Image 1 (cartoon, rainbow, N blue to C red):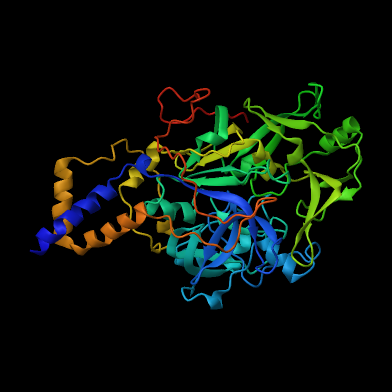
Image 2 (cartoon, rainbow, N blue to C red):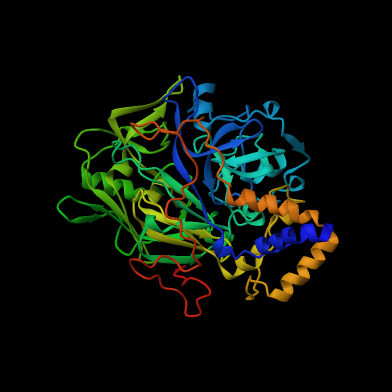
Length: 540
């Protein structure tokens, strides 16, 4: 009698577990202004709204491509006192602080790997110098984690830093999206996304309300509405020889000022190429050689009045008089041209004052550039106002397009051959058993994810014989998966410039799951002839 009652549920288990990766919809989350202090309606920081603990404590994340683990600050936030002058400023710029004692689901563990986190973080030159010490010095924690209204896990492993590791100006809580990302591994293992792929567009900020636009982070795919033209794909390379700790090394071949007359002015000497690392969480557009700022000032007639200690720490400040009003185009040796609007690299001076209020000095502008000498050049978050980035850890590649600043959204699943082998083995959200098991190994199997009728029958009989109640658990997991959009949170309030609104969950408008054939509505991307991996354009 028990077998007859539970057989349909076990068959449901089999069908859910056999769901093809491309049928699992991506998740999208806004990168938006979030109010931090409940009694200060202008205490904004920009990032990805999230929640930790029970009851939920609202925090703000920034994506970090070089980190495998997620790192959340508690009430020992280690802000840089030389540029962050009190605890209120620190709380706002960190994106609120986590309180372990106020979470009933908090659990301290021995270390990050035993909690289920990744056992290795980068120690490459150019990355924040304290990353190498995070694993040995931080408090290892398991607690409930939500990104927006989507529950990642009831008990998710993360670290609470116990040293000043990020220079204090990159700031918000760090969402690790590296090659062994605990977050991506968890979401794939629990069937919430179909691949270890993430994509990002920073949006448009510091402009009038009608022109402001939230950015977005997509997990498991990308947003086809945010890209235009052909894509350029390169292999991820985390080796020390590249000098790029995020694995995304590119070569800048040209930096041009685009004059209103239609003419262009080159800022680089002839036959110059700058080896550059894409670092999306960095606070500027570009960190590069001195020749760029020298030529910029020579060609525009602008002369710096000093460096910024505001949100765009280390950028060049100018009086807002006779400011250059043209765009800037950054060209890569791959052939990609990225045009950055004037409003996204010559921005008003902005900081957080002692009350926690984000304030502007409109009599000054900041050129979002910093000079580097013995450190690698970087392209930061403002590069992603003009470019769209997708990272595919399953395929070992990253892809860029010119960005299309559209408010429309159509999400596309991206699934590589390697990822397909992992989709048939999903489980309900829960803790990783150990650090080594948290990573998803690549597979070279080319077998289809669909099961034959004989296989289904065999698995069903075996599952019933083992324990019929497993089917009940998976049934309710499947029901939860199809209804994973939880009730929206009304705190914190996310406020784009000039308009208040309440965050209401991941974008779902026009979702269009599809296999790993990248956007081709405008120009069909060039893929390798065997269709297994994107074409690589990578000059070293």
